[in-house]
Image (cartoon, rainbow, N blue to C red; front, side, top):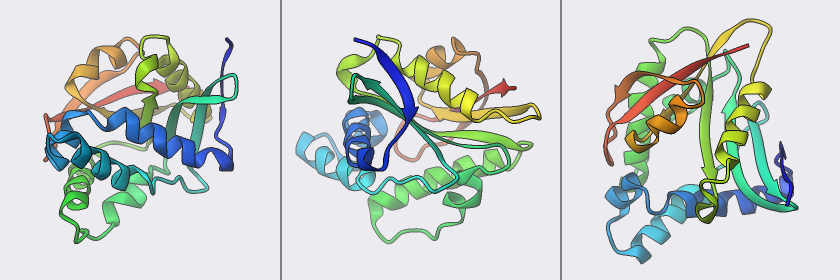
Length: 194
C-alpha cells in the first residue's frame, strides 16, 4: 500500500488525537504522570491529548496508508515557535497532571530562550503497531521541508533518551538536556533547514 504525507484535514483531527493518545499512553512520562494501572493511564492520556489542536499557523501533516491516518506531525515555522509564543505563556493549570505537562513546557521554554530564531516540531507520532516502516522518517522529512524558509534556520524538537539515535539518523544533533518532571530528562535536538 502506498504511504502518502499530506496536510491533515479538519475532519481528521479526532483520529489524530486518538493516534497521539495511543502513541504516548505507554511512554515513561505518561506512566509517571498517571501511574502504572493501564486504565488510569488510558484515561489520563486521553484527557491530555483529546484537546490537542494546532492553530492557523501550525503545520500539521498526516501520514496515510490509503485513507487511514497512521502518523501525525505538528510544527511551527521559524520565528513563530508555538512553544515560545503560546505554551510558555499559559498560566499554571489547577489540575495536577496538566501542571506537570505545563512545567515541562516551562523547562523547554528556558532552553528555547537561549536559541536564535528557530522552527519547532511540537509533536510527532506513529501508530504504535507500525513502528519500523519508515513512517516517522517520512513525517519528519516532510515537516522539515514544509517549515523551510528563504533564510536558513534551526529546526528543534525535544525527545526522550531512547529516541536520540533515531533523530541523529535524520541529521539532528543534541543541543542540551531538559529536565522532565515526569520521566527521564528529555533532549533538545536541532538540525539546519534550508
